[in-house]
Image (cartoon, rainbow, N blue to C red):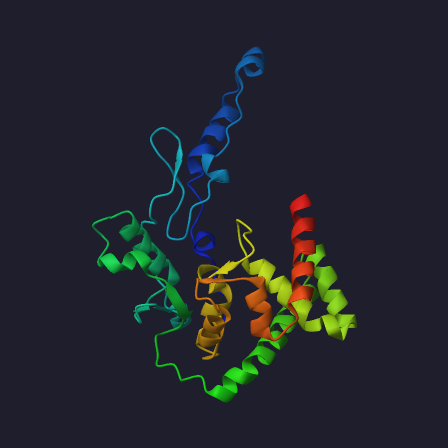
Length: 266
């Protein structure tokens, strides 16, 4: 399936038109040089460094301050591949609509149609359908297939020059050292999924980038990821990730610290 952009990439950023008009007026009506020298204050869009979560968009309030209200409308999607299936087993028109509703319910807005939508999540892309049961032999073979898939994705990103120098170094090592082939790819993906703050664990929410796109194609992905969370605390540690993929834990731990440390020094 085609990649699905994050909501913040689908929605236009905060209205910059007002700022552009102000700057244009300043160009047409230059102040005396002495005034510019003494009073000039550069105009910076307050939304430039404002992070809004999914289902929200940055706008300026009456005081010119950046806020993140719920997105007022979502693009009308005609492509059936844009549909999503939620954890309520309901098909929605797009991920934007799901995040918008989640925002309405979080804000206790009257547009929230069901109280339980406060915790609505996207399970996978595409219409809801009956998922086949993952058979025992399929689950047994899945770690191998997952390892291969992670390495292939890492190699493709390297070929397209979309990896950082740190991850590119791991990928090149994996190409020439077969003993590092799977472990390096596992390190890369685990560190990639462990978002901010880097707390050395991957939450269920952080698994979304690999779970949602694959669910409709790989019916074993959900039970596989569930099985990785051995202690059922809704977080997957590197130890659990290594065991789940059938890899040596020590190799992954050391390499992840090396990558994480180098990146934080930049």
